[in-house]
Image (cartoon, rainbow, N blue to C red):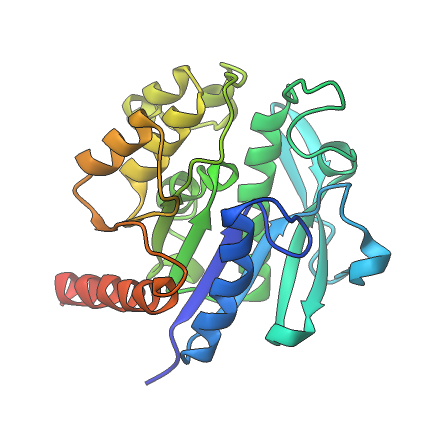
Amino acid sequence: MSKAKVLFVSQHIEPYIVDGHMAHISRHLPQSIQERGKEIRTFMPRYGCINERRFQLHEVIRLSGMNQIIDDSDHPLIIKVASIQAARMQVYFIDNEEYFQRKTIFKDERGRFHKDNDERMIFFCRGVLETVKKLGWAPDIIHCHGWMTSLMPYYLKRVYNDDPVFSNTRIVYSVYDEGFSETMDKKLPLKLEASEDFADSLKVLEEPTFDNLNKFAIDLADGVIVGSEKLTAESEKSVKACDKLSLGYQPLETYADAYSDFYDELLETELILSS
């Protein structure tokens, strides 16, 4: 039997961004899963504050060069890669001069939420899936970490659902308390260019808040994991209301085994349902 393939997609990964529990999990979880016999790939945004020389990032020419259209504008997709030698793993970075060259992550120097964070999120999520397609690497599991990945379940289920690379892919969304208090551009549902038969599912994004992004992802994911010890009241409510396979918060001592078992259970469940 071939190794299960797990794609990790996160908004923060140590040591590139050292910022809380999510970044720590996103660094060590892929290594732990790889050590447990699964094949892995890992993606994050290439924020402008990441020192390319220090971390030895370099562009992957054969994967770069695609354009993505967002709100009627073309945006070139650049793919970079770096290695975490101690973990024997590579990290792929989604880059674009307009969206990710600025030195700040989600807020500017004055603490103002970037007005185009919605488009940066769209670009990142689509960029990951387009790159994986180009790699020809079909993941069994996609595990998403953070609100920046909250559109991944939508794209997998509604846009790339007929693509053979993702025909057997299950998607897991980890919910964290690392969010924002602002509201994104209310044109977000229009920028997703969804078909009319998906309009009802997009209603939650008419008010694109942190909690509503989490709810949107939870509703479309195949499995849900509580990534933070405490969640906002609304996100906790969304987790409790979902009828998906779910896993509660796991401490650092147990999370790797628990997550690996969760992936296996999800794949076994889907295998039984499809047989």
